[in-house]
Image (cartoon, rainbow, N blue to C red; front, side):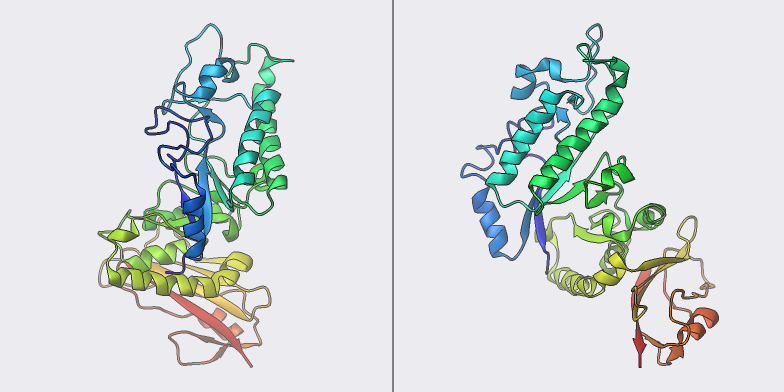
Length: 365
C-alpha cells in the first residue's frame, strides 16, 4: 500500500496482558515476544517500513515491578488514599531519581533496537498532588514535574536524533509550544470520525502547522463515509492508518494505495506550504481548505460536502495565495486562468452528500 512506518501499540512490555498491570516496566515481554523485538523489526524493515512503539513513561500500575520497588515514587499525599484512574498512578517526574530511571530504561530500549518512532502517551488527570519529601516547597510540584518531563524527553531526543516523537495525552491534551520543542507531531484527538475531524483539525490549524498534526484513517464512520472521504480528511496533516487491513476488501486496499500515492505527491505542499481556510468547517456542511507551496508554483484544494439538503446550493470557493499574474490549471477544469481570476471569480465543485475531492493546482508557463 505504500505505508512507511509500522508501530506497535500498548501491550508489548512487562506483564501488560491487560490495563491492570505492567506500566512502568518498559522491558520487552518474553510472553509476547519470546525472541525479542528484533525478529519483528527485521520483518517490518524487509517490507520497506520503519518501526515504532507506544510508551506511557509517566504512568505506573500498582501491579508492576516498578511500583512494588518504589511506591514512594508516585504523586501522593501520605494521609490520603491513592486514587487510581485507568488502573494507574502518576510517577513524580519532579524527582531526579525518577527522571534518571526513565532516561536509563528508554535510552537502553532505543539503543538496543532499531526504533525510529515513539508515541508518548499520558492518559490520566492529576489527583492527590502531594510530594511528601520534596526538597523545597511541595507546592512547586507541577512546575518541577513539567521541567522533569522536558528534561527526560529532551535528553532522549538528543541521544536518539533518528527517532520521530509523537505526543499524545488522552487525545490532544498536551498540544502546546513547550512540547513542540521536543516532539515532531501531536495526536490531536481520540475522535477520528472524519466529519468531526474537519472541525477538530480546523481548530488545531489555528495553533500548529499541518506537519505536526497526526491524522488517522480508522473504522470510525465506516458505514456512512466512503474510504476516499476518510482518507482526504486525514491527508491534511500526517496521514496514518489505525485499522485491521486484513479485513479490508481488495478494492479498498487498492483505493488506499492510490490515495497514499497521491498523499506522498502532495505531502510537501500540505506540510510545508501555506494553509488557507476557504470555507470554515465549524457548523458548516460544505468546507474547503487550500495549501500553497512557498514558491506559489503548486497548490492543493480539499473540498468536503458533509450534508446539504436537496436542492443544494453549493457555495463558491475563492482560492487564495496564488500569484496574481501567473497562469494556473486546476484538475477537473478545462480553462487556464490567472491566479487573480481564480481568486476573484471563484469556482464551484459539485459534490453529493458525503463526497469529497482533492484537486491539484499547477502554475504553468
